[in-house]
Length: 394
Ligand code: KG4
Ligand code: ZN
Image 1: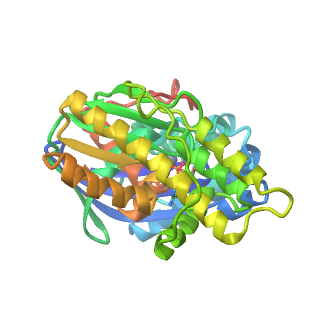
Image 2: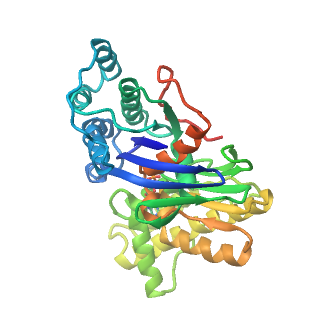
C-alpha cells in the first residue's frame, strides 16, 4: 500500500510517501519520498511557536513539499487535467481561508496526473489547531480530487509507533513483532504521558503531567539561561558540556513527585527552582560555568523523574517493551540513562527509541501510524474530518 502522509501540527511542514507492507506482526516501510521544512528559524524571534505564522507558513509550503515528495517518489507525472467546476467550487470552499494554498493547489492539480497512491494519512491532532487545519484541509481537497480515503492520525501515536521502527537502510524501516504489553513514554513540547498498549492499537493513559510538559520545561529553562528556542537541544548541549568537565555541581534541584506513588508528573516546581537559582545570581547573572551546571542539574532531575515513573509503570503493567516517543526523546542524556538503567533494572524489557531523524516532527511517522489504521479500513469521512488541537490517544 502506498500512503501519502501530511504533518502540520506545529512548526514543521512535512509530506512523505511511504510504501508499506505487513501487519502489526511485522511491517516494513519504504520511504519513497520525504519533504520537510522546519520553521524553527522563523519562530525563534518570538521565543516560541507563533501560531498565526505557523499556519501561514504551512499554507505557503505544503503544495511545493507535496510536489517534491511526489517527485522523489517518481510519482509526479506532468499532464494537463481539467478540474470539473463542481470540484473547483468544493476546493474553494475547503480552502477559503488559505487562498494562496488554493491557488497553488489548483495549478498543481491541473498539471499532473493522479499519483498512484492508495490513501492519505494526515495529522488531525493534537497540536496547534490553526496549523492542523491547513494539513487537514489539504488532505480533504486531495481526497476529493483523487478519490482517496483519508486516515486521521493522532500525532502522538505517530511518535509512539515510529519509535518501534528499526532502520535497515536509509530508505527502509521495519517494525518487528512487538512483545506486548507495550509501555509508551511520550515526551514532547505539549505532552508528558505514560500510555500502555495491551492490544495493538488500543491505548490506556496511566500517567501524565499535572502542569508543564517536560519539553515545555526544557524550553522555559532555556529562556531563563538566555538560550534560544527550541530550548531542549540547547539545555542538553550545556549539560553535556558540564558532564564532560566532570565538575562538582553546586546545584541540587528537586525531583517533583518522584515518590508520589502514582504515575503522574509535575515539572512546574522544577522549573521554578531553576528560576530561583538564576535570580540568586543577582544582576551580574550566571557565569557560563554556572549555566552549564544548572542546565545539568535540571536535566538530571527531569530525567530521574521520567525514569522512575517509567520504571514504576513497567512494574505495574508487566510491560515487555518500552517505547520513548516525542521531541524530547532526542535528548542524549535521557537516551543514555534509559538504556543503562533499563539494562540493569529491567533486563527483560526491550527499549525502543526512535532514530534521531524520527524524534522531531515528521510525516514518516504519520504514514506509519496511518498504515496500521488503513489496514483495518479505519478511514474518516472527509466531510466530518476535523482538526482537534486536544485530540487524545486514550
Ligand atoms: O515532538 P516535538 O517536536 O513537538 C511537539 O509535538 O511538541 O517536541 C518538541 C519539544 C520541544 O519542547 C523541544 O525543546 C524538545 O522537544 N526537544 C528536546 C530536545 N530536542 C527537542 N528536549 C530535550 N533535549 C533535546 N535534545
Ligand atoms: Zn511532536
